Length: 105
Image (cartoon, rainbow, N blue to C red; front, side):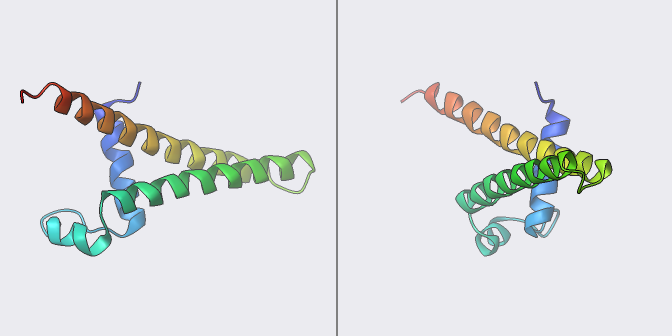
């Protein structure tokens, strides 16, 4: 299970990689300029898929003797971080959905 700190770090790294401003200047205007939640989710999923494909390519190249082991480990580590980000977002969406279901009508 992912800790809250790990989820926050994964979210922050996703925001940084997307170029979304964080901190005091960030807010609804910054979110509107950088795209909505759906855009961020699509970009995160796309990044996770491409990182996974790159890791698979590096593993195949290592088996053929065309890649260094450090490149394979780095690619797998990047794919793992992307997957952890997707899992953290999924957990937060499920948590929010459950909270909405418990709200009185």
